[in-house]
Image (tube, rainbow, N blue to C red; front, side, top):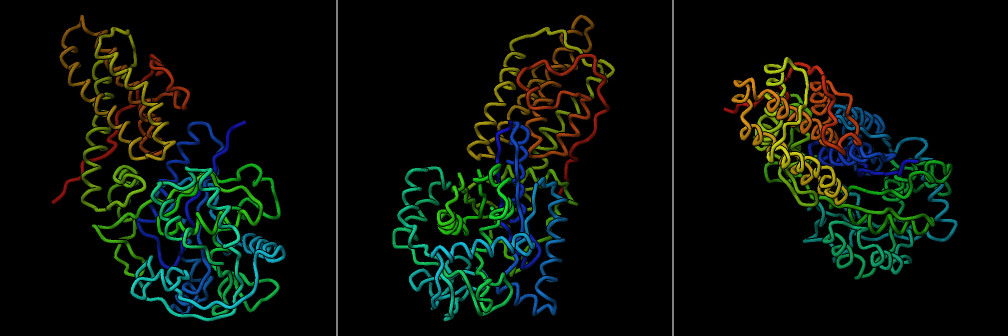
Amino acid sequence: MKEKFYITTPIYYPSANFHIGHCYTTIIADSIARYKRLTGYDVFYQTGTDEHGEKIEKKAREAGVSPQEYVDKIIENAKDLWKSLNISYDYFIRTTDSDHVRRVSKIFNKLYNQGDIYKGTYEGLYCIPCESFWTESQVINGKCPDCGREVKKVSEEAYFFRLSKYQERLVKYYEEHPDFILPISRKNEMLNNFINPGLEDLCVSRTSFKWGIPVEFDPDHVIYVWIDALSNYITSLGYPENDELMNKYWPADLHLVGKEIVRFHTIIWPCMLMALNLPLPKQVFGHGWLKLDGGKISKSLGNYKDPREYINAYGVDAVRYYALREVPFGSDGNFSEEALISRTNTDLANTLGNLVTRTISMSHKYFSGIVTNPKITEDLDKNLIKNVLALKDIVEEKMNSLKVNEAIEEIMEVLRSCNKYIDETTPWTLAKDDTKKDRLATILYNLLESIRICAILLSPFIPDTSKKILASLNTKETNYESINEFNTLEENLKLNEPTILFKRIETK
């Protein structure tokens, strides 16, 4: 039986069409999910949209449509974008899905009936864009500490979740599970800024707008965003109505979230799960922001292109590669078109594309595209083979610690060594001497086998390119187990004609 791996992105807020920042998180999650599938896991990869709330209601009213019509159009666009990016999600959840709505109501009722939710009055500061409540001590110069916009004072009847009841249990869980929140700086931030000063009970219903899931026993209230949104990770698995998928996949192995919502996923969500007597996720990773030319990407400012413009101009794998390779995961990073072009030319066109094309071209030129391996080996070969065979374990260690950019760099370093191997062995010189033909065949075999192994390891990151490389090799040895040994590429194969994987992008 396969070991399971349940990975999620945050559910994105569809107040406007998605930008490259949404793509960044989703591509990273996709690469991790693909890697886990490659290595034999039973993966459940979930993404989706968080569609309720005051901001959506307001946007829809301004657009002259219903909230449902407003979000439907944006979600249609988002799903098309994920298709364009080759995102291999297993489930796309919408908080307007009837199953989710029904299950959230049952969760709310359960928490209310057991005394974890009670009725009161909320008075405080509220940020509409973030749908977040703040205390006087948390706002900065009267503005939201997350987005910097104005907050407004509100006073309304509301239901509250007894967040404070679970403070001690939460701190104990942090202590007993040191890797629950990563990077470690995020955990320190949660403890110092939110938990140690004392958790306040959480407002979980609103009466000032209607676009949300009604409280079943008090329909003047709608269930406030975090009970609705955070529950998506278990309602998609059938909770609390059906336990088949819950038993199979819960707890989540990895929640990937932007750093601005770490607080909700590592304080509110764990306390909700404690109240429901459910296991907590194994890990929450709060990554940094992908900035655009040094500034924050903003839906409200509209300071970004449709990501499909980059895909159409440079190719889906160039965009995927840049997002994965350029930014150390966990830190803020910068997206620029110039850097995307530079990375594509350097790594994909020169290092990878040129290696594959010239190796297969030489095989056709010198051996009519037939693969043979007389094994006339020298120390140069042994060093190359050693590096190639070490790659599997190195990539595994990097991926298990979520150092995706470093995993890719390790593969690229081996590909660079293959290019160096060509320069050092000079196949074109050997081809002039018939007595060196077996040595030439060995060199080309070593290159082809190295390319095969690297192509398989690159498949989670640039899947289309990986398929093209393996198709050019015409090999059936494409599974993960086949990279345990060198010399697995079948002899007497007839290679297909080489194709240009990435054209060099000329800039003005």
